[in-house]
Length: 458
Ligand code: PHE
Image (cartoon, rainbow, N blue to C red):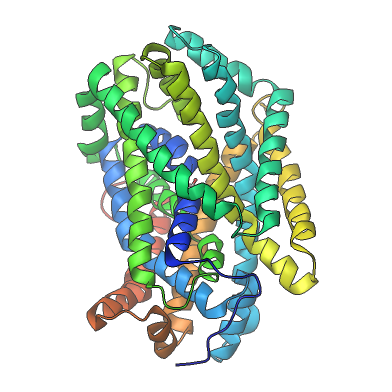
């Protein structure tokens, strides 16, 4: 066993703290905003099945790899990759994988913050009873008015980035750990209440059928790519967020077990969100393929009609904002850690730099909803384009490279030592997955989606 490194940024106080923080990173807008709307756009059941398969076959092995690499290197992803590559006798250029992750982090947070702003903007709206007893059309127009107003969006985007920067600047341990401890279970509970509402007051059976009865004729290779991209996005993989959190993980904690808990919790939240939303969609004659506005146009209908809806709605959007917040901080932590390590900046200064850049980038996404509506990249507005580029291309490629790093660059001894899995069979299984299955799966999905090869259906 080699000498263990120490992180200059500190460590989580316990394994539980890591689980909470990583779950906080994983559970976010991806689960509650994105999962339902892409499931709606890509046809339901079959898409969900592919997504679940991607979590199991690609997500969990890569999450283990990221945590393992992070803890082995105990530095920001850029420095960790450089140190480990050199140590294993390979090219230090692997550090550029860390840089690609930093870029993904900036880009993701730039639009993430705008959407988190929508969630925050809904807090006073639902609380004031604006949705009480209103029609689905009115609910849709309230959403339209919000995203059409650049000044309001700017205020919320700025507030969200400010909040994110406050937590990041204080360091991971104080504040954050405490917050997720209470907020995650509360969010979970509220989702269960909403599922209960859908069960009693909406067309639950249609919702369940849409989510779980696979109709493969509705699934295209593009849908498979989106499902795979989303598996990376929702588990915060492929850009170094989980890696940097892993670098603060105490040495004795079991990586395999914690990873399974985190992935399980994340998946459960997404499925609950789907079960809360789709029954409402069907009983109000809305379309499941409504796109990014879906949850902002469906859930308020429920809140407008259910007993205590203004209160539950208020709680829901607060919790959604918190879920987004605990994800956002993990998106800039890799670059903040690097700035502290290599530029000798204080955490506060590093955060101001990273947050400032993200805020400015976010203006593009924000304006693409209103003033720059007609500006398209290929066929998408800036927000959609950046979302698709990061989720469907950058994260899977980052994940692929991470799998290669863990399985082909790092020696068997190092990974075996760091993962410390008691059952040798499980270790073998993990290694087999990251060596062969995961990389091949990612490449096959890519090649099919861009039409280079055609395996099976298209
Ligand atoms: N996992 C987060 C979500 O589902 C988003 C995220 C992606 C966070 C990548 C960190 C890194 O909302």
